[in-house]
Length: 410
Image 1 (cartoon, one colour):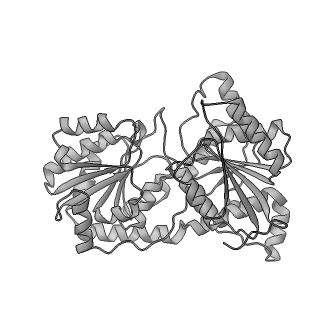
Image 2 (image 1 turned 180 degrees about the vertical axis):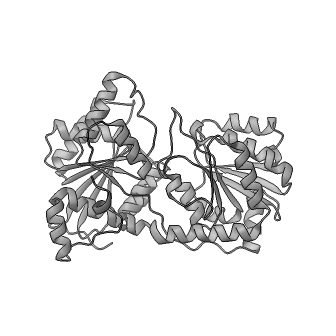
Image 3 (image 1 turned 30 degrees about the vertical axis):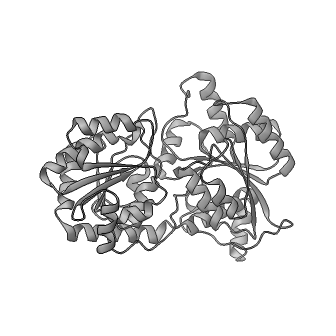
């Protein structure tokens, strides 16, 4: 990462709603970890106190400022952020997710900041209350005020283009993954299954995600109830926590499969657990409670060599061609989920072939290092503009990342 040089590095202020365990929070951490610290000097402001990612980010040598949160939107927090921007004078304010986007944009406008504003869109759902005229108007103002809007999938980019009648300066930068060697199968895999509460010779179907409606875990359980009739060795693992836990546990009992389902809760060792599985199932949908942008969970499963059966929503379809690393099915097609899951559970060579292809895809185009390089190019673009960027590239003063702003920025 290199050492920081306060005299020449570009100050960037990152604004995020919280630093608790979550996909956006992890992506920010990975960006900071691989960001060129000789050229960029980051500061993180969290709009909430506490959170799992504070310590890891601070361990990178990045300062973290946490603001006190009492309600969904507070003038006091806006003023605090405004004061931080005035004091630190960042060249770029880069925010993650709708709540942070609003705070960052309003602070920049009120303070008449000369720095550039980059906001992020990482999920398909509309902002809370965006059907109300005033809040929808504020939402539109935020997007139109940004120097760039980062989407983590082409689906999100298209969603914004359809929503806004005027042109937005959008860029697609997919999520990144830290590349690691998945634990070897064999006795280690059997031990992992036993430790997770499954028989050593079981076929484990797993999923990872917060227990909220749009993740559609209820259909995961319905699929499980059908699969286990055809593949009695099948067991099912749900990694994640959330408000629907009790309801889902009751539903598993109602379906008569509670002995085949392990609710594993929120885990920090997901990459170590996934290799114990044989198949990854992702049943997410889009509804008023949320929607997928570019799911980290599927990327992690592919990185671990797991074949996947996933719903065709959001950026998921951009990860792999149907039939290469797994199968994509319509989000409401429970029967097709069952058929594809049974097919893979009965065909170990096919599982291994698809799993290997999935890992190859992640290693080939979705590394955290490449994601950071793409953001660095975006920062260069908003600071010096397209003509100067092209000239700097020609003189080899900066590196142009593949498939980045030169291709996607409007």
